[in-house]
Length: 271
Ligand SMILES: [Zn+2]
Image 1 (cartoon, rainbow, N blue to C red):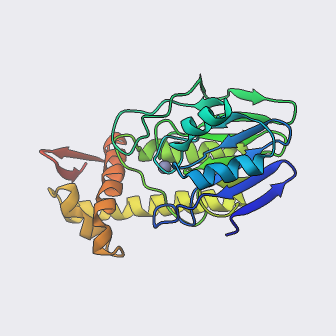
Image 2 (tube, helix red, strand yellow):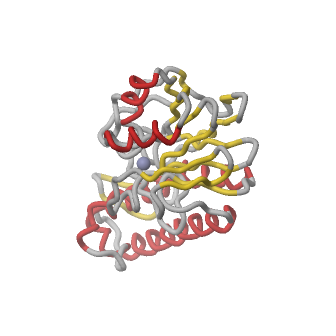
């Protein structure tokens, strides 16, 4: 992936130098506008990345928006705001680990809120699931959606309860599908030019995993979440069982919410 791309007039993407298994090529930082610039997800605190953002902006940065407060998306926001005087927009960090508590929004956004400038309009779309405070941002003029960690092409994002919620995630995927956007610009990886295909793939993949959970649970009742992992994730490397356990718990909690499973003393059974 190129470190810098001009995706359309006035819409630019910079990849932060934080590649890893969890972040792919790195976190995508997006810039809108030529006269007064809005930045989405400046990423982790990496001084060279902040300098590049300011260099590429080539105009005053007036707004910094974050999709959510995971450590690879928002920690540079307050520092960039300090350097530029920009306004910080997003939702506050929820309690819990893996959250960037340094992020303090000047303007707390709700679903449907708009940032309207002379050059563009951005609409906030609340998409809980991967994180309870997750927002996607729709560039209204282009009808592109900047999806953070909500939709990433061809890969599954972590749903880590209790802040991550599988039921909300699936509902938020449908919500995004219903927007009928022209393209999705994710927080990691390349732009998605067929939103329906990408979202259907994710929904199918999650529901297929859910069916595996139901089958495994019916055949192996009264196991703990961790004990169930090898029965559901036969295809997954043992090294990843820690993450698999979180994801399995997210599925089980959805099934519990649906009335299809229940637990007693941390042991699960089908209903
Ligand atoms: Zn995230």
